[in-house]
Length: 396
Image (tube, rainbow, N blue to C red; front, side, top):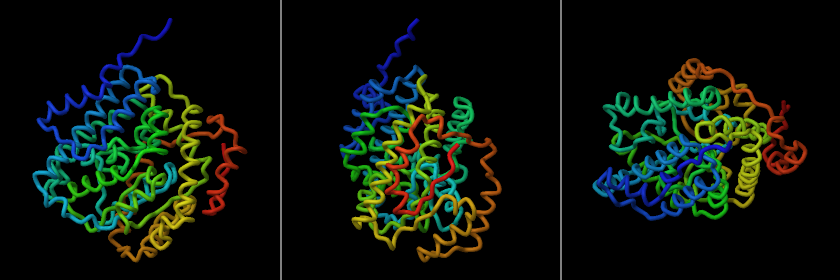
């Protein structure tokens, strides 16, 4: 007996746009670059993602949130033009691939009182702009936390793979969703046509211009000394990132790519349970192995062709960071000429002690589950590993 046909009607771009315009009373989305990405994403969702009924709801709801945020952020900028005059101090940006320690590194760097990170709750719903006086008590925190808690109910075990919470730092890929140019979409859903467009054809400059507008809004009434940001998605487009933030300080984390692919395949298969009945590790790993190899190769090219200034980037090996996280972080501060205060280190140590895996258990995965050929994949990643001195790890 065949499965009942899923109604894909809610994934109609014109209808979604009309819905958020009516709900907000706003109609100016700012720069018109967002529409191509929205159309391509929805086309791919309808034709390739194999969504079940809940998946259609999740995808449509996510699109509504991103469209609503774009309308509201644009409106706040129009009504308060001084917001755009706010300087985004050259940020520290973690640009390593996923599953290389980027999340815990960002969470630790966020403990430094001198650092400002975009928290999940304010990225989920940036308007009205956060206020310092109510930053820790804003009612949006509870709403965002409830969403994170629901993910563990819908996908048991996901928090062990990738902790989520309203008061944890959020990634830049969630911000660039507002321009519908974001690797978060191919993470949440199987959308290979959209991913090919995003990685090979899309101009990422508009996404980073939007990214700056969001940061300007978030810091307007709650500034910090320096933004600290993170996204594995940056590695594919370092040139566009540095065109927008030419003085950024970059941290690239490194790990055996085959371990990255195995871990990511497990993460994606788990995550996609929320939206599809088709969520096999082997399929997800094969899909993303090509993306990962391409991104790593681009990171090598960016060093060789001078896109990245060697004085403005530090390389961190996963094994070193796991063995000595605070010594590694101290080395980052030294390299960039920043003060690694006793207060900052103390807060980092307290955070790590309070979040040992966040109490959700251990992420277990195996390269064998990917179904990929170890020798063939190792040959494809050799250029990256030799350039950055990344050692092979034992695969299970």
